Image (tube, rainbow, N blue to C red; front, top):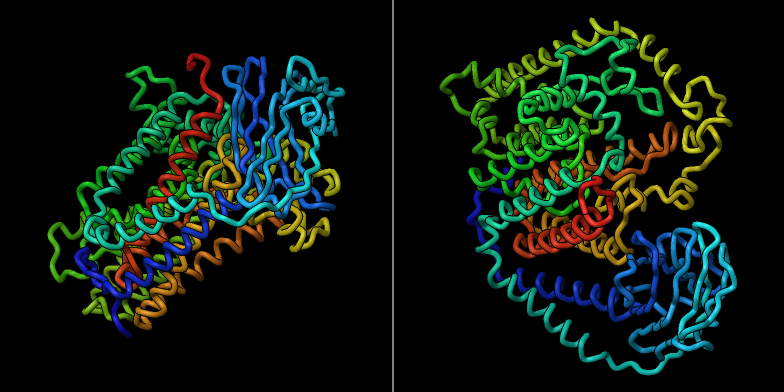
Length: 634
């Protein structure tokens, strides 16, 4: 079996192949630009509102005879200090009706102008009484009245709707000059990346700088956002607060833990995850500073990100493993509030480096004949490996990948002394299992070997819709959908499991109610797909068989992760949440690092930078902007 790419950052790529790939990327980016901007309708709105709080205007589009769908929607935030707004909607060539939701509360606004423009079509402008009269009330609206040069719209409920029938008229096919210049700029940008970026990206110095930006944004989110505005943070905080005062796990019946149960009747204190102990001890350390417990717990996530930043400054090869992290604002969001997902991701990224980089302590322990301080190193590494068994269950797919990756390296001949390799792996496994056994022992002391006591408390504390004893037809509609007769096809096409998972993997804040625009998610979708295609075809075309094997090992583990999440949503609880997909990040880090010599690295890294810019936009203008703030934050 052939060995994989060398762990060097100085390799170069054939210029001819790079030029061809650069041309293909430029064409793809040009098409994306035309698709999202030239061939989309641009809507301008003049709206006045006197509401004290900001709100959203939503516009849906659909073809004749079709229903309005959530994925065919865009929105813009309005406030009383601004009048002019703009946004992109769908292609006029595929739209015959619009639905405008002018607000999300009972109140009144004035619409003074609506204009719709798209390349190749005559403008649609509503700016007088006749034009604005085409906006017809559909739901929870009094009859609009035209006065003082505008259409006064009064909502009687929280879901008011206006309809607008449109008949787009084609005019010309000459591309406007601004789009021509934009295409030239795109091709020029790709050419510059292809010519200059390879040397810059070899050392990935932009990674620590980008991560510093992420740390600042996450610190801001942790500091200014309010309570009860992040997913499950209340129950996470209950477990953290307990360990801020105690060292050992409690019996599940203890009065000390009655505030830690979720609506499902589960307490995080009954889990084996070590995050709650560490976060609780961290808050205890900060107690002399008189920092509120909530902020102390959130700062634990900030400290983890700061550690990744500092380690990337010390170890240049570690920066490769952080590239996938930079692509998703949702991953950053996990570090901004109290939850165990961020900790699991943090440990998995560190392990991905330890297991893949030949310069890591883990690989030196497995390979070097003699090692100073052998047993302290073995105990430290074994405990670190064992900690991976004490994180969220979905990260076990990372453990599966790490194990298969080690076997792949062994059969690729990367370990000269097989006896030494297996002996030292065995030592680490024994130490890691010992740590897990010690934690399991504490759990048994507190709650016994079986789950009877935990199930009794679940029945006691779960809300009626989630109690085990509640009849199926009276449970929440999202529970046990397979038993209810819901088909797999309905989960995908009607409940839109895949779309919701994707959206919540790249930018959904609060309780997933604060979302970006359709254009944002489309740009992320196509850019990410292009990165995967560049990696896949580069490895298949240029890589040896061993590289093919590694790529498909990673693909198999990712498929199992996605499949298990899908199966759980169908058979147990419908939870299409992108945070369950975060174990993909360390897997991608390993694949990128070990296979980087087989695909156009400069162009791929440029696309990751583009995703980072999109993620930054999402985190600042959706996350920080929309998530409710603490009372003292203006």
